[in-house]
Length: 483
Image (cartoon, rainbow, N blue to C red; front, side):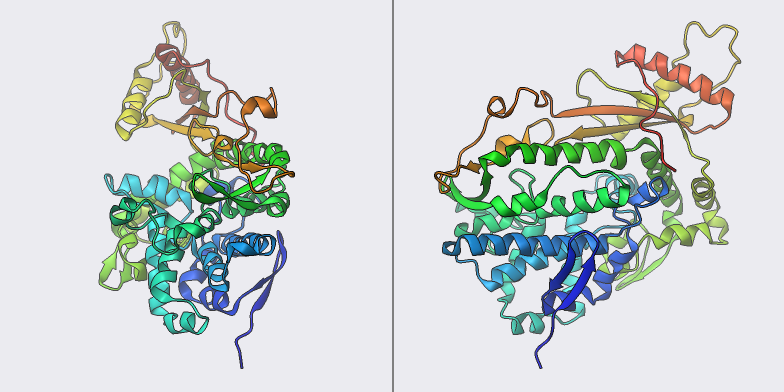
C-alpha cells in the first residue's frame, strides 16, 4: 500500500496537505527537535502570545514553497517544472531552519560569537549538517529514491536552496555557481531563500505567523504575490517577477519587516532578556555536558557534533534554572532574575549621526567611556561610583533587509500587456512618500544596577556620553512592554 500524505491544521494557512516523504522527514528526532526552539527567542518573556516554535514555521514555509512553485508550474508549463523539482523545493522549505540553536537567533548572533570568537558560523551551516545527519540516521536515501529523487543531484539542490552555492570555486568559472539545477531552473533558487532581493516564502510565513502571535496587524498580503508571480528572462537568467501594480504591496512587505523589528524583534526588553540569557549561557558553558557521537560537548561545541546538537534546545534554560550544581550558581542567579523580572534597566536610546563599525572591542571601549562620562553639573547629586561593568551597550541595525540599499531596486516587474518582458520600477515612479534612507543604527544603553540612585546616575552618564560623541539626544526605551 502506498504511503499516505497527512493534513496539518495550521492557524495561519488552514489545512496543509504534505507529501509522504515530507512526513517521513517531520517524523524524525532531528526535525521534532524544532518543537522546543522558540521562533522569537526571548520575545516570549515580553509578548505573552509569542509561544510559537520553529517546528510550525518550518511546516508553513514548506507549504508556501509548494504553493509558489506549483503556481508557477500551472501558469507557465513551458518552464518544465518537474515533480522532483517541486518536492525538492518543499524539502528545502521544511529543512531550512534545522540548524537553529536555543532561543533561535540569540544563539548564532550573540552566544556563539561570544563563546567562540573568531569562528564564522551561522545556523544555515548547521542546517546543512543537520539535514545530512537526519537523512543518514533515519536511512531516508532509499525512501527518497522510492519517490524518484536523484540522490546526488537532488540532495545538492536542496542544500543549495538553504545556504546558497556550496562550492563556488569550480562553478563560478562556468558562470553558474549551482550544481543541483542548471541555469534554466535558476528561478527555483529564489523561492525558499531569495539571495537577489529577499522576497521569499520564508518571510511570507514568518510575517504572517509572527504578527498573529504577537498581536500586531500584518499589512502585507502574500496571496497577491502568489497570484501575480511569473518567471521572465533577466540578463540571460530566469527570474521570478511580479506585476507592476504590486510594487506598493512589496513596499508594504519590507515596511512590515521593519515594523516587526522595531516593535518586537528588537524591542528593548526582548533584547536585554536575550543579553541576560547569553550571559547565563556563557557562565554555564564549561559546566554543561552533552553526549555526542565522539564524547562530551558543551553548549558552544555541540554545533560540531549533530548527535549532541540534536539534544540542545531551549530546555537548557530550565536545566540551568533548576540545577542544584554549585558550578551553575551564577548562571542560575541570572536566569532567576529574568523569571522574577529583575532586569537590567534601559537608560534610553540614541542614534549615531554616521554609521559605526561595531566590534566587541568597540563595545568594551564605550562601556568604559560611559563609566567615565561624569556630567559637569552633578554638584549636589548623590555620589555614585559606576564601573564599566555596570553598563551594557547594545547596538541594533534596522533596515529593509539589504543593509542601506532599497531591495525594490533588485525586483523585476512585468506589465499586463507584455507579461514576458521584465523591467525595473524606479522610486519616483511609485510615490514621493517612500523612505529616503533604508538603514539606521540605534544604540541602547542599559544599567545592570537596579537601585534608584545608580540608575539615575547612569542616565546622567549616558546623556553626557551621547553629548561627548555627537550622538542624538537620548530618548527613553521603546514602546512599553505589554508584559
